[in-house]
Length: 99
Image (cartoon, rainbow, N blue to C red):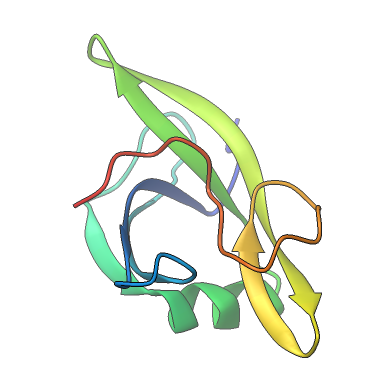
């Protein structure tokens, strides 16, 4: 069963560490992940707004472990991509590796 349209496996923050610049994303198929691609933060926001779904995935010992669903939280007119719904003014996708 497909858990999301895309799996995010790594993030790259901008210098101030408020926003993510890019993510490593893999399209999700029924029982496997497709090839990895680099996607901008703006592309992730646009896809989420069009109804696509994203979730975090971490590879441990050769096995993909699903994390949390990703959504948009808007605070003071700024959209943040987050795995939680708190009102912190920063992107947060959990403990993903950075590239």
